[in-house]
Length: 336
Image (spheres, rainbow, N blue to C red):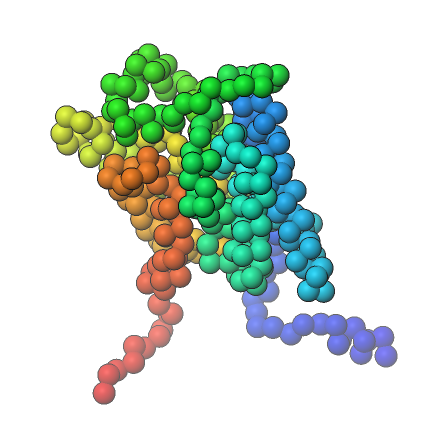
């Protein structure tokens, strides 16, 4: 009888049977951990306000998922870290100056509308954190574009508003950017360390690259999307980004400004919303780079990473379908 009981517990499936050691929770919490350097840099440059905004996003995201699932008598999944990650990413995509209701609204939109109504983790079409930010930018454009000057403070209450490097570059060109930062060396150092205005998590490139290195080392992401994304932005910035004609642009400024590093390594590589085939991932990254530079150079916004990733999310299934390998020995059906 014991043997029969055990037999009923077995699941019969077609071989080969592969079981990995990784779990959804382990992956999600590792990604959360990899964003810790960027969060610390945000708190260092923008003070307690950065922790307040990010913490409010995380708390709202986790509570929204828990309340939604409990109300529908479903198993709560807040322990897997995915809601925490969505809140963290949303918080790192917001300015330090936003009022308290902005993170709350954005997190509810990201979790309930973008993720849970589509069926939960693994079924969402778009990146939840980016949809949350896009909704906030459309609904509250003024509040979402008030940037504060980082002063590496912990007790200062007042902060001076200023423009982001990409905003200065778009409005006044490279010459005005040099007036603000002094010279290119100082500009590059400010962009790398995070001493510039912008969203909380997009400022310190060094902090973001430390987190990206963790994900690459653990094999949670591959180079295909980030490298193709960054390479496309760099080439297009060099060819079309200059004011003196073709091939006079500065690709470095575009590569380490704005939300490119955060988007390329932590958001465009989202398992659910990007292609699964390596060749498709390269195409996905190139598409993100093209749209980003089109918006930066010709669009009405100084930054285009968010819109680029969301637009390419629409094409992810189509890209996978177009580049999938043919079955070995398969015979193409003849048209009659």
